[in-house]
Image 1 (cartoon, one colour):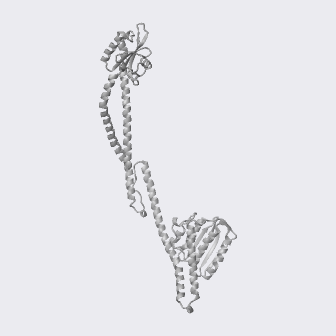
Image 2 (tube, rainbow, N blue to C red):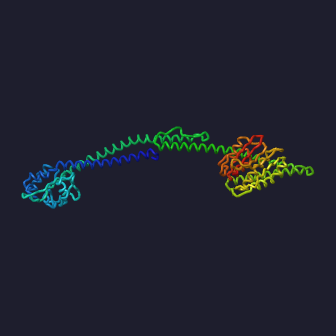
Image 3 (tube, helix red, strand yellow):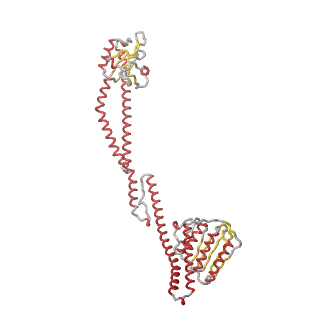
Length: 482
């Protein structure tokens, strides 16, 4: 009973039975109303006719022993009638019944006057044999020979004997009628609503089945519901929303799979970057230890120290990248002299470039102030220059120049190094005006930690970048400052 179909079926069946019972009650009331209207209309002149044919009543007599005998004769001819005479105030005067049968000795003459005035039937009046029940009646005024109003002749239509027989018959027939009606109503509800609910819930059942089949499909290949659902508008819209969610889920799965692959490649490259100086450090130290003291060369220790510095630099960059990805670094924008910033960088990299035989050309701008975070921008340029020095052979050239184009200011870092492949360019160009997190975007395969940091820092600074590079011909990084 937990399924939607069974719940709808039970609710609908209960509603039909309740509706059927209400209709049955209304029909009973309508039948009773119509029956009373018909009977009262048929016997409308009954009291007037009785008063006309009876000598005493025609003379306006309301209390006489002979009236009881006349009432007895009338009631033998019409067992369903009860006859009374009333005085002008509605008090019961004469009747043919035992005294204890009379429960109400006063009749409301308001309805009698409405009846005599010809108002719409049925009209219910006081039943002298009941304290609360009202019945249809026939009534007429009684007048004496001088025309003086002496009282009323009041005839109850469907009296006590009629009620007894009707109750007896109803006790035998009503259970059968009710049983047949309820059985028919339940059977009708079962047939009609089973068919309707089966029809209306069929698309929902199909949707549920199709969703179960979707669970066995591979997200990496894309998942979707097999077809359209032509049921109600809500089910059709629900299937469309589910299709949209499945498409987004599949896309996210493929994105995550790509990110994991890119991360794996990045970690492989990173492990190589870490392994190289670590191997060099360990190799020269071990060589130093196994070599006799008189044969040891000082340059071995110098090379080992340089490898240690490289390893330390890589670890520092890893910590910096982790801080960037975790949102621990924020841009603090202020007015900065671009010339002074580039002069500091030139002084920092000049000795290293000279040692490696690389020409370092800083084209310093005029004293130009820009709004930026000086530490983050310096870190971006430092990483680009450092990466250029690493991959530019002796005799190569690295240029840093500032220029304007279409009202925008650009800072270019150009080298004549080994360059990058297209997939490396695509990875680096995945930047936006917002800080970029490693989990939300593919890592930089084969680009090293330095360029990964550049990627994060440019996101913090909201600086777009354009990259041109060809393997063996060098690279050009163009950063838009304003």
